[in-house]
Length: 196
Image (cartoon, rainbow, N blue to C red; front, top):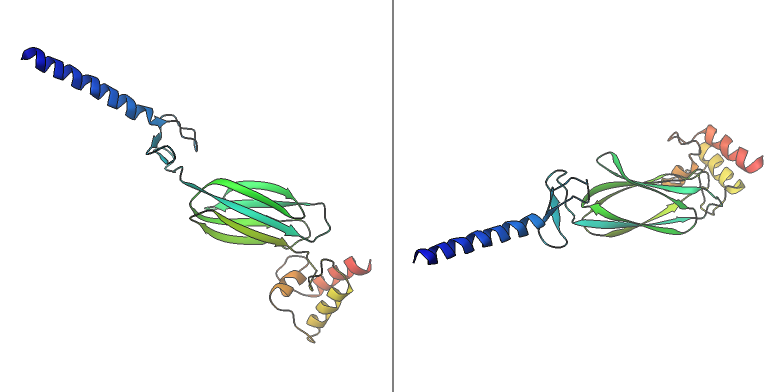
């Protein structure tokens, strides 16, 4: 009988050792912050880091960038979370698609900038993978035909002389110098582009 209990006790110790080894195998290096023995895996895809307190449950954001601007400039795409840059990428102007994989679920601000174009700011709550499309629009192209020309100059002149007012995006596109006001400085800027 004593041998039987000794055998059961030995078997229990071996099983305990096997289980603790199996649990230890599920703790590994965090792929997000790099901390050793901080990652606890709940299954093959989902894990949680005890150091940086982030999970591997991630989503993706696909951004389509379209531009009619005849420019060889690159579009700067920045993704912010809590005021910090999470991702930064540069894509050529024209029609481009870029995918940001591995983002944690949460609230993000996406900014798209290109020289000579109106910057775009987009706030998004990512709880699943999403797609956003940005159209880069030239500063001064009030009528949206893809070029800054005499028609745009005439539209802004009419606005400043109170003949025909600009609203919404037209007002934003007329702000050449980016001071959030449409005034004679913007008219001079369009005049310089068109007539010089």
